[in-house]
Image 1 (cartoon, one colour):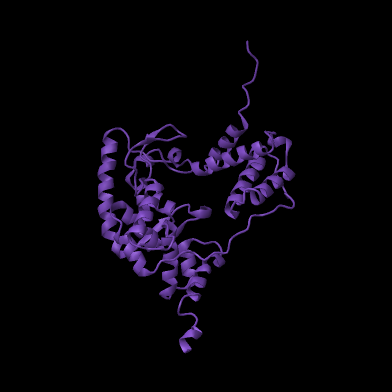
Image 2 (tube, rainbow, N blue to C red; image 1 turned 90 degrees about the vertical axis):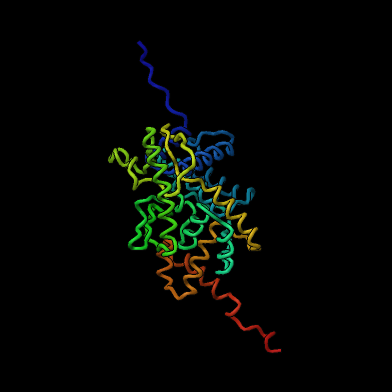
Length: 325
């Protein structure tokens, strides 16, 4: 009889398990595991249990000084290591002491004029046009648009409910009257595809936070399906289940990038530029800054105030002395 106990999972597998128990996204899982691996390699493959706050501080300094990473990148790395020590090793770091922090650049966001937005949208069509219209017309982040579920579009109230946005918050944003008919037409096509998937023995969709166990029928219900679905079914890397995921963000990013070039826009505009433009144009039209804050889902009003700086630095904000010569 073998009395030996099963071997303990490897550390990075423990990290994955701890993340999945807490229902973090697969993006977060990949990022956290990668940062834990890099941290271990930086310290010559020492086990994190044999290290602590001093070693974490040294690695954070290395990222800022030698790697010259952005502040957001350094913060993500620190979050991964805090999670490793607190949730996996169960030895919270506490104060990591003096650490060189990456500088947070004080840059104004790139904002398009209304005519530039119009030109950009003219260069898009189909699904890409519809997603871009939602980012500009409702202030959605790209992944918020990709993860949008059918049940969260309220046509009667001209509203979209953004579930589990940045920071895990829900919010309600406006839905443009001009998108009612295009979205309705698009959903008819998605419904045809969903019915076909059901008839072929598929048709389920990923549900967050173990909702599938609580509501077993929900994954195949129409309301829970993604608004923007992938062209092909795929295998979920976690569960191994074959289903239709949401449309990928990279084709949207490429489409917008190419549309910017074709429209002759010289600004370094991206998908996120449409969200910046949404906020700036709302303020230009007289919207209250608190309203804009709620639409964008910003926790801190100071984050929203960056758009007032864009307005204040416009060409009409200060009269040039050259005009008087």
